[in-house]
Image (cartoon, rainbow, N blue to C red; front, side):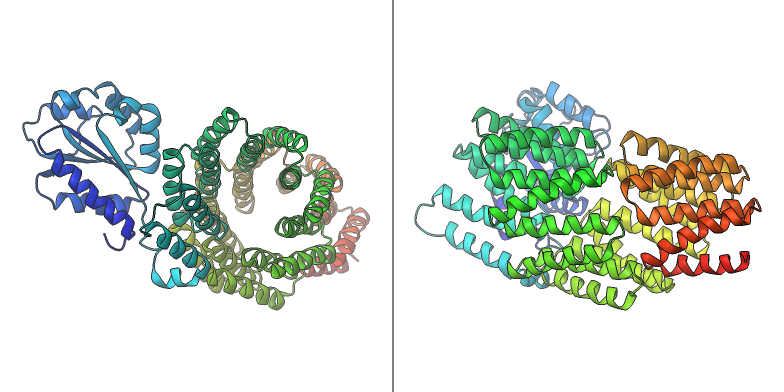
Length: 627
C-alpha cells in the first residue's frame, strides 16, 4: 500500500480500522472509492488480511438480499470496481437499504470514482445509512521521488500547505483553501491530474464544511477541467451543472459566466459546435454586463477556436484579434501568448507559414518573459511543426527535442507524449519507420499510464499511418479501427470523422472500393452534421479518388470540384493544390493531355509556394513525361 497512497491517505486507513472496531457488534457501511483497478485490489488485499473480514462475490445484482441469507457475522468486503451491472446494483442497494440495520449487516464496498459518484446521486438514502465514505488515489507512478523532485514549485506549495495544517494554532479555512487552490492550479497547469484531483477533493470537503459556496463551485469547475482533460466528459458535465446551480443560487454572475463557458468548451470537445457557440455567447453577454474583461477575452478566444473548428477562419480571426486587444489592455500576458499561438495556427492552416512562424515566435517570447514553461513547450512544438511542413526536418527535430526537454523537466506528461509523437513524425517523414515506431510506442505508453484517451487514439492513428506507408494495409486498418473505438467511447466527434476517413482511405488502397465508399460516405455525412468544412472537403476529395479508380470520371469531377470550392472558401491552400492535381490526373487517365497539364501546372505552382517538396517533385516529373 505504501507505493499507492500518501501519508495522509494512510491515516484514513487507521480511521477506517477504528470504525470497524467500534462497529463490530452492530451494522456498518463503509464506502471506499479508488481511481484504478490496481489500487482497488491493493485495498481489498489490505482488508482481507485483517481478522473478521471476508470477501463476498455477489451472484446477483441484489447484494443485500443475498447477504441476509448468510449466517456469518464477519464484515463482508465487496469489490464493485468497474462492475458491468453497477446501475442495477445501485438501484437494489437503494431499494433494500433497510436490510442493513434490520439484519445487522457489516459491509465494506469498493467502487471506482464514477460508481461512487453515481451512488451518491442515485442512492442517497443508502449512501447516508450509517455510512463512512473515503476516496483514495493511486500514486504508484505520479508520486515517484524522481518525478516529484522535478516539480519544485509544486513541491514547495505542498510543503507550505502541510506546514500550515500541522501548526498548533487554529487554522483559518480561508488561508487553507488559498493554499489548496495554489496546489490545484499548479498541478492542473502541468496536467498532473492525480495531485489536482486529490487536493481538489480535500478543498471541496473544507469548502462544504464551512459553507464557502463560491469556493465550492469554483473547485467543481476546476474538477470539470481535469475530468475533461482525462476524457471523462460525462463527469465533467455533471461538475459544471452542480457549479452552475450554486453560482445561480448565490447570484454570482462572474461564476455563472465561467460555468457557461466551461459547458461550451465541453460541447466543442464532443463536436457539438453550435451548442458551444450558444453557451459562449451567453457567457460573453454576462461578462460584458459586469465588465469582466478577462472573462470577455477568454470567451472570445474560445469562440475563435470553435469558429476555426467549423472552418470559418475569418470569424475566428476576428474573435482572436478582439481577444488580443483586451488581453493587452488588462495585461494578461498568458492569454495574450495563447491568442497569438491560435492566430499562428490559422495562418499555418492557410499555408502562410512565415506569418505563422512570426505569431509563434511572439507567443514564445511572452511565455519566456513570464516563465511559463508549459506555454514555451507548446510554442516550440508549433515552431517545429512549421519547419517539418517546410521539409526542414533537422530544424524541426531541434525544436521538438527542446520542447521535450522542458516537458520532462516540469513532468508535463501529456506534453511529453505529444513531443515523443512529434519526433516520431519526423522519423516517419524521413522513412525511418522503425525509429518512428519506437517514439510512438513511448508516447502510447505514457498516454495509457495517465489514461489520456484522446492522446492514445492520436498515437494509434500515427502508428496506422506508418503501416499504411509500409503497405501493411491490414495492420493500418486495425490501428485506425482501434483509434475509432476509443474516440467513440469518449464521444470525440471530430476525431471519429478523421478515423472513418482513414479507414475509407485504407480500403481505397486495398482496391476495396465498396467498403471505401461506405466509410467515406459516413465521413462526409458526419462532417456535414458537425459542419467541419475541412473534413467535408477531404471526404469529397477522397470520394473523387474512389470514382477515379472505378473509372467513373464524371462522378469523380463532381466530387473534386465541390471539394475545390470549399477549400478556396476556407483558404485551405494545401488542399487546393492536392485537389487541382487530382483533377489533373483524372484528365491524364482520360487521355486529355492539355487539360491535365493546365491543372497540374496550377498545382505545381502552389506546391512550390508552400515548399511541399515531395508533391512538387512528383508533379514536375509527371509533367515532363506528359510533354
